[in-house]
Length: 77
Image 1: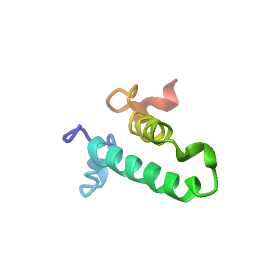
Image 2: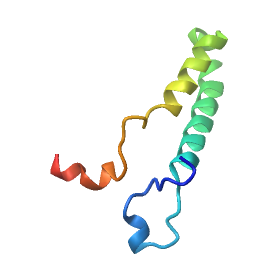
Image 3: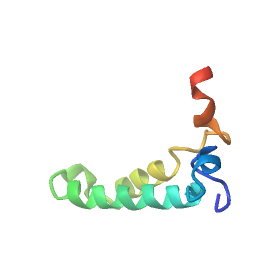
Image 4: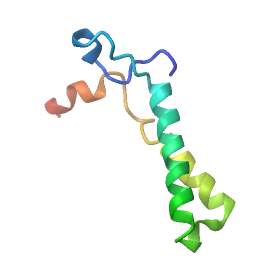
């Protein structure tokens, strides 16, 4: 994942488009943790550690089923 381009063919047009799937996954995991910290204070259901871990794991896995260049070919589906 460290070397798989997240932005598909955008790198052909924009050479600085170097966002990888690894960086995307780290960002999503970080944002899920941040959201839990903000929401956890208001939602008593998220106080259990297992619930918090499940939310973060789900966020990290949200793109698991995407093949390479999947967004590039969505308009054909």
